[in-house]
Length: 324
Image 1: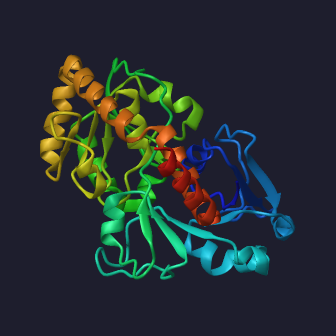
Image 2: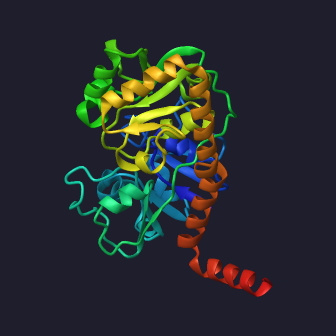
Image 3: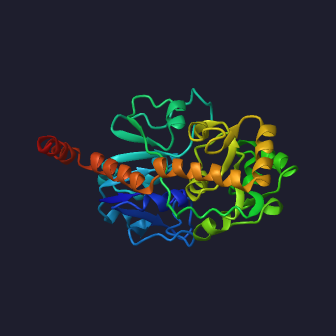
């Protein structure tokens, strides 16, 4: 399977590349959004293949995967041939609607395009019209139960948090930081954070922190949350969007819309390392069951096969039914 897409979210592309298919991404000298190439941050395997943007039209693909409105409205007409634009299409929607939480019509309204949401919350909130939709929940690498929690601090991992404001909870972060020792990690954190920690080094770095704090008000379920849970790091966050359907409050993490309540729970975790380890262990059980990278890669492989060769899939299913 040869899948063409753009490099939009590095972490997601890295996990997507764990599947048994080839992913082709365009490059340009200007390195505009989506044209960065493989970059230096993620340890992509050989199945992530760069193509100069002016050579894309000369290649053969099985499926086109869009990830932004720019990809769909402009990029495809600039770099894909007419024959390539007629290939099976999938649109991967990473975010919930921004214009209005319930009444925003999605750009894609086409029964011939599959719209994939990364959370059930996102699919619930978008008005997707007649477009067939499905959810493929996140999958992340299992580094093992590497949590130690020896550092009596919390960690927040968000790129450019100061400039992204209330949506991602910069004000919530500042409120918590006045009472709780928390470190902010990510690109563009400025005077408020420690800067970027590259993805390959991040597991060992964050495993020493007592808990992971997510101050984001309105977003998809962050991959950083799934990664923290998979390592056994206890998660504390706002009971909004998909996180409220992942964390069982007081069992495998702590969630609430009352920030004072969350601060109280953070203080408990700082004072009781045993409780933190217990909460984190149950969070890891949730992550193993729900965010398994093999399940994630299989879901994507099956979707690519379904849209690219539906007759072959029907034939395969018929043979399996006959065999049973």
